[in-house]
Image (cartoon, rainbow, N blue to C red):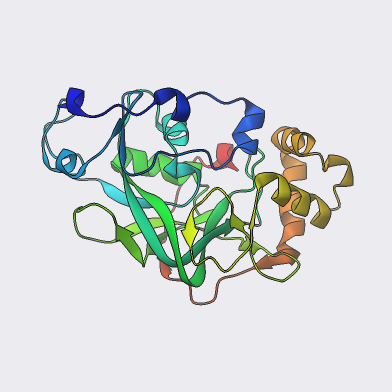
Length: 271
């Protein structure tokens, strides 16, 4: 039953953020290991919890749900609570992604962060999460990812689950615009995401903002806080910046994922 789960420190992972911190602290902190977000509370998740009924629901937690690899903010309880609300039940299991790193995209999100995506990197092992979504949650996740415009829905390869879970494909999202190139014409990884045998340098959100400002000739918006508030307030300018970044992008060569066509309405609020 739910009372038998070991409670994770809610204040560390579910505390609300200001609009500035929502961009500045991307991709947010996540607990080590697997967890369960259940009706606004956060619990550690062990193998036995996946196999037994509980007070949250009678059937096993992962039954009927779609596994979606979370490479950035979707791995964090704060973001899942924000997207799905205080009544949602969302199991999240730990996983490793082989031969990929998580790098910054050539995008600016509607809330002012430079988001991320997986990118091929031979030998790299990235510590991530798999979010198990019911049908309605998956449709809502498609909207929040700007499916078909900002991101593609894909079937991922190279995912190694850290718990025993139902067999089958794992899905995810891949940035359509490509990733942001740095001076060495390579991408830069997220310092906040743990990885082994990393080949790319890692940068903070503040550092990648400086890169975007330079490439888009936004000298007056180079202070990170000013850039964030400007991008949040001015959609037209944000789209212009994204357009300018297209001259400084890298597309993956033979990526370890397959695009799954999805048609989705109602994504304008997330672009």
